[in-house]
Length: 282
Image 1 (cartoon, rainbow, N blue to C red):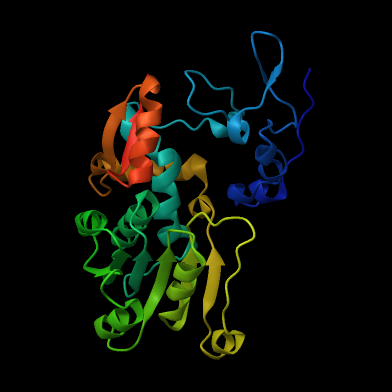
Image 2 (cartoon, helix red, strand yellow):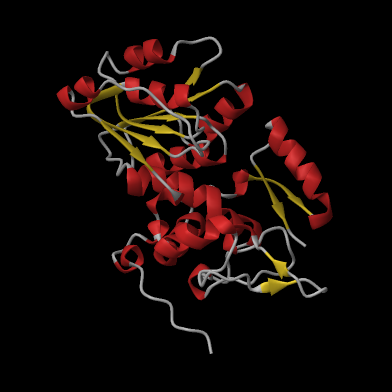
């Protein structure tokens, strides 16, 4: 009989994205009890990616990773709630706690950034500014709720933010790329009392430079967001409700539905930056 796992202080405290067991074991592709739970036909251990396993017909997951949603939720759209939707919407709603009076900047309009825009729109942000280097992604940003767009190939971000906000800056800046220069840029255009959220996946060992005097003098905040600071048990069903009630657009996020055998083609499209998300349905 398996031993009962100890309660995690973060999970009990309502912050499951910071779970001790996930931090300790998932990075090593083990289950929460520290063991591989899948074996190959030859009897060897199979290390499931992030402790869950991906791109397979079946997966063995801990009970806490199986979240029930409405039966009328379509598969492809519900699949996206498990990652980009929760990460992006949550960065705006849960981490930044965007208010209706806020002007929000989102840097990077991929899957996470577009959903951060949706999150800001969901709570009624006064103005939502999207920045990217792709015409296609900027057009998508407008579709999902951006009121203004900035083309970083031809426009200076700080200068355009100053123009759009009357020199004030933005109350919230969400960085959805994970690059030092874009994190610093998000922080640099904050209004007094503003918050910059790092939602992009940053490479290990990356460093940024900020001025601590400016941080204290202007009461600026620079915070991280993992998985949208979400509580999946409650946030997944809520996001599905928002979608089915017409408050979130998940249909436009699904660019293609592909078979498992076409996975390499899906990765090529991802690298090329075409479309938003391909969903594997096998």
